[in-house]
Image (cartoon, rainbow, N blue to C red; front, side, top):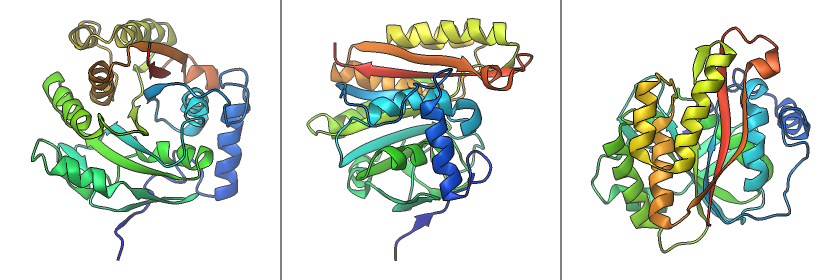
Length: 283
């Protein structure tokens, strides 16, 4: 029998009703104020290796996430999306693949790429297999309904990260590189919000510093500015994996697709969270 990971945050971060969920996803695409202003699929396929995508409630960050997913909609069917997200609860193994073979959302079920999972586990590295790290966590789950909306045929490989310092991110990136470097149609989604719960002016300034470091693709600089400016980016580990992997694979162009904050939706700029979608491409 298949081991199924049931949704943990349906009804909280996004609607649990299928029709309402589809309606909200479409709203985030169609918005021309913060969203991309059009529904997928995109007709322009970018030569990308991955995207940094936010993971808050859809009504807050979905408009920014839609910019990345519009581009992802043009990627080939049958792809595997390696989704790395921070473990906000600190439960389970520090860097964990799922034991579950199926992940479920209100839009249906998605298969885990168990073949790639087992290849990674064969390295006997810091990457473990532990469902406990995934059961409550939202950072990976919220990406899946967007993928289900834009793609008909795909697999996922979730990786939850509690350990996010540079040496761990580099090791994870190098293991992934070893397993996908000679394969096609494998892509990274690094799930992260940016600065948390500060006035909008402060959030925008700190986010700009973090985004500029990401665009430079310099991990030492990235970790330096996170500490120096106290940038409370929750998924800096997943972002670092994407940065290092893109360097290893020769994807040398980075583009900010959209940056906004929660106040741009709510109108309350007193304490906001920053969001960005960033793409990593061939030069």
